Length: 87
Image 1 (cartoon, rainbow, N blue to C red):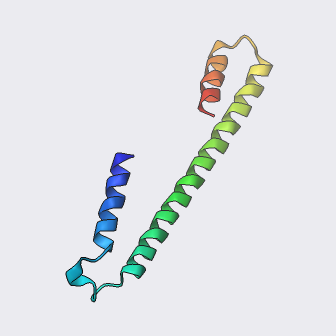
Image 2 (cartoon, rainbow, N blue to C red; image 1 turned 90 degrees about the horizontal axis):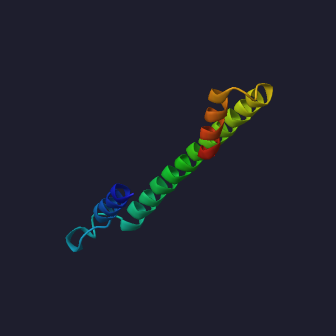
């Protein structure tokens, strides 16, 4: 997380012009562009997390079905519990 914070601070520092460059750079446009990039990154991350949850849930469902078929299979029970903790 700290690395991400450092990158955001760096991007802010390079987006906002100093006094000597105020006339040459449109600060509002730069900030809007940075905001759009951050929002896009957050949306991509959120979709990746949702996809991961769906995949893990499907795996848990499959393992649950296997476990119901054979209650004595220790490996399946162990894998089922491990996957269940991830969700």
